[in-house]
Amino acid sequence: MLRTIGTCLARYLSKPRDELKVTTSKPGDLASCLKKGDVLLVEGTSRFSSAIKYLTQSSWSHAAIFVGDAVNHSDDNSEAFNLIEADVLKGVRAVPLSEYESIHTRICRPVGLVKGEIDALLQHVIDRVGHTYDLKNIFDLMRYFITAPPVPSSWKRSMLAFGSGDPTRAICSSIIAEAFQSIKYPILPDIKLLDCKTREGKRYQKEIMHIRHHSLFAPRDFDVSPYFNIIKPTLKQDFNFHDVKLQPTDLG
Image (tube, rainbow, N blue to C red; front, side, top):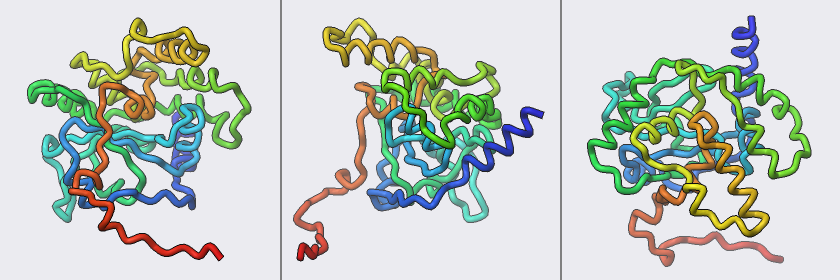
């Protein structure tokens, strides 16, 4: 019964809303920049996305990992399924890059991985294709779908302690975080390296201590991580600002 209710809620809450979120790079540029092991963050527009963005105080509500040709799967148009994600309705699955080419995204790239480590990272997520999405998250986050409660910023992240802990269920960022932890690649810095003399430093320390387990990582963590490079496709294409044609504005 709860599974049926959760599925109905998920179908309603995951439906994109009429909210303009355009890509900031050309689709071809995005495809040419991605490398195996890259984490692709997505700014979603659904009610579910809004709850994630509110609680993490971030633009990013979803994450997928680029696996390149590691998955031997394509559609009728011979389009490669080169991303793996955990979808709220369809579970852990492989999808083509075109799924997100027209949406605002960000590429987060781990640094220093050798081929064997990348292979192990990708195999970890590939082995989980077919697992179901943890619908317990739907019930945990349901109180934020309709209206955002006025809670202090320092409390918001602790409210993301969701997930049933069932290894055959996954959320979008936890499956990726678990994969990186399996090869001992860090996502957030060690707590001993932080300067916690300021009030903000102490709050950040508390936040990091709270989210050590892979099930508590959010898409935002790959963005703020000091161990991932942020790759901007436009800048990788020999960008020259002199070539940018700006539209004239009417200030009158």
